[in-house]
Image (tube, rainbow, N blue to C red):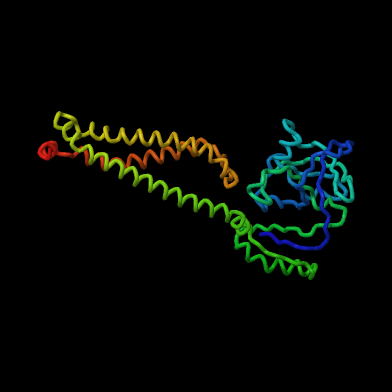
Length: 319
């Protein structure tokens, strides 16, 4: 559960990270995602500590500054190094106020990457610092309190938490939202697209199966005399089935080749709708080809079995 509070005040900018004693250059890459947190805040959100430690009671205003970083930070700024114990100078850069040194901070832990704004946003380097070590005033326009309930529903905690915070400051504005609601809302568009894509995909597969069935049944009807003569000359039922299915296999094979080529070209137009899946994902193409082949075999099997049961004598009498 998140509680968004508005104490007021605005101060926007980015954090610059440099080795201790190095003044940031004008083009120094900024870390646009940073936040002050309390011990166990990450555990409340389910973000794991991958190396090192979390913040605890040792981290106060009188102790050396420490920070946590995520995996994206390590990949970008400390590739191939053990980040635990590495000191880094932090500088706050604001367009109007310039650079404000924040001192040297030592990395004491690495945490997993987490999405904060959108699941489609690439994982950004993120810095976490202890709220207990913040000496300057809070200038945030809002902040979050994360609560994890071990028994009752999180929504049941809303009244008690609201009462406790109002007792501290009656002017605090609060909004309670379960994280499940936040996640569901962020995925609503993706789920709608997935449902629509699934519906039209199943519809297209059904139409393809019906089309193959119709074409195969028509071809069997037109070749009924030929099939009857083949069977009169000793052709077996299994051979007739193979004859019909081989024609369908050629049609499906040509269709798969053309479809894969067209999909490889058109997939770039749907790349923005995909999450966690590459536009040219091999498993998806292979799975689609096998699914189409299975539907084709099922659609052609009935006409093929019907062809294998043709009575040669009846066909010859009709001729």
